[in-house]
Length: 374
Image (tube, rainbow, N blue to C red):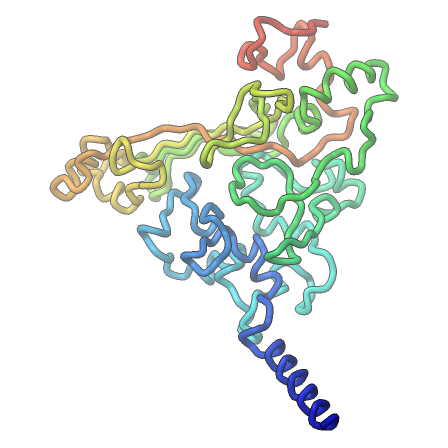
């Protein structure tokens, strides 16, 4: 009887081993199931995201609707190496590790150059330049992952700590990314005005408000999706290098997909943003902002071919297909968090509070006058 029990036990163990190691039972590729691998794919697309990530979410930068337009011809080749959920290593059928790592086996940290291949749009949105001349941390030899540490969650071990970027709506990559992790709680103690900075300011003003300074790179100021240049691009206005962000009270909360601004509670601080104005067509006045009229149809509706599609032209398009077409204009706020300046190049007290202070517009923040004039 005992040998029979032993044989039965061996059979059970072998069966479990086969089950665990069967192709269908293996865990998902860790990079494939990460935020960067999913890029917001909702369960409807076979992912775990909430549908607000970069792959599926409409964005005014490109004004492209996956829902209405499907995949772009050549999307995998042209876009897939950043939108990694569409790109696979032909040899393995999995996400190609070399998209983010130097080696095929995925060992070693990603370099700044590898990160910025995709995050180049952070320059367009925020005026960042990721090099030694424009970032104090890079000048010290630090890389992206020194702050954006690799984390694990129920979906993947390839997640990364994130900050407070309000234009990243996916509820992932939550970490403990904070200046205090490396800098002491009273970082200004060696300065003459250190006590004031460490008591009054740090409770109301984010570190990046002073330490991002004038932006080193040009950035978007506006984009209009009913006016086009001769080569078919939307009319776009850019800020020149040296522009100053707009400062707003922000508490980290959002209403739907949009951040809530204003001095709402004691956790609110003043943060810097690049405020970009976008104009585009939606199908009717009460439609969702992403219920767009796609760009090819907007261009086709330009009856007099003057490069501008008016509301009247859009409503007459194809015998009134969009008879309630509405042109909307909205401001989008892009967080400014990188290209950190050394302390001796950050905004000074006089830059905000002096008689010739030029950084903060106090009335826009709810003050009747400069709260601490020097």
